[in-house]
Image (cartoon, rainbow, N blue to C red; front, side, top):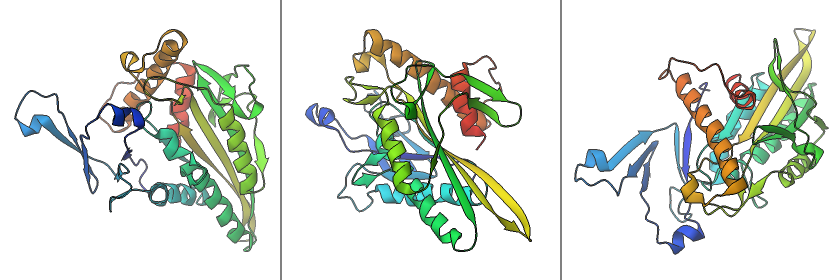
Length: 307
């Protein structure tokens, strides 16, 4: 698989947008996404309409459309390769990036009857482990779940513990969180319990843009160990899958945020914005690197780019 793949997804209008009579300005065809700028005071189509090409353009605006991209299709395109990477001994990372209310958490977590990438990847991992076990390979799976909220790192598997954990740097393994809970999981049901426990502890709040806006960056990490024999010699392979649900970037005047919500938004925008700039740097468009960054932001970025 390619080292980096980018997918864009358009969701249905929410009730707020339906009530205000919002206009659909996005079109998709194949891998191409087009955006119409209705505010452009010109007849020049090159200014009014812009097209962008991605690895995948998912049309999820209208469920009745023949081009509708379901949760299953998103998993088949993106999630299956993540599982393949893990079994081949590579690290992998999937993260959702975008404005608040754009559907990041739905794509990553989904609903009980319409699961997203994270639960589907976890289930596929254990299904494939069961097949491999028949050939004599043994497996061990550990998970951790953390959130970064206002530059504080919290352990989501430890309950509503307000203690901020320290981000450290290992000379060989890179950044890690000291004291982070890791749970040994034996099956999909167990990993599902860990996800549900962590999701219940995530920081959310209502804004004008989203009734249940994620106010923190959440990282669900699966450490996957395979043990077997290679040419008669015992061998062990360790892979990590990082599944990241970023908090949504937002404009303060759009969200109606004040006080605590406004402060949260400033921290969210700072980290999300800088991660975006660093990803542009990965593409070669930016040569300069800024060395003085917050540790928590660096942890997110290094976790992502080491995969």
